[in-house]
Length: 209
Image: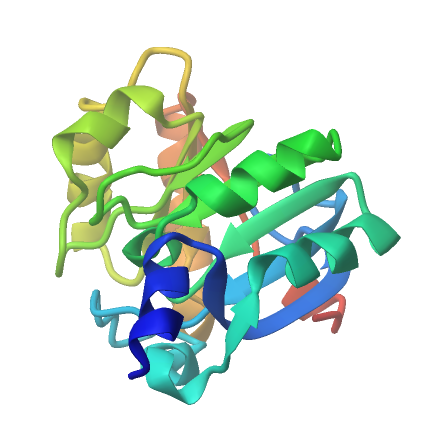
């Protein structure tokens, strides 16, 4: 890679952009809210049920000017969600600083497996067994979202919940391909353990991006 290009990427002035779009937040605490989504390429966490595996290889996604992305956000929304892939593989300081200048609320969805960079209004931490979060992010998370693929994930959820701060919102979300089996189990679990809430991928039910 060109050294100058690499420098811009290292500084966060360019990011491997997979896609960007204006839509409705489909899951978690802000379900139903209009937001501009920025999906950054690159991920080595490797969830077998990931529904955006095409995001894993950052080299497939063009290095895009961060300021251009910010300009696109301004056209549509006052809230942005930065997701991936795993967005914290990249330096988020530059993009969040420039979004803040525009008074835009900034959310991130992350596995927490990489050091936290950037300025955030909302941190959704979604830990994965294959590559656990770093210690520092637990007390900063506003939302803990555990994807439930099988019954063993309830134990994992409780282990992770012990690590976050007391004000963190706790969500259990059925993995989409196994939702018919796991949703009834999640319903029962939440009724028995009401500190948890249910998150659904409502955008898939509504057939929106």
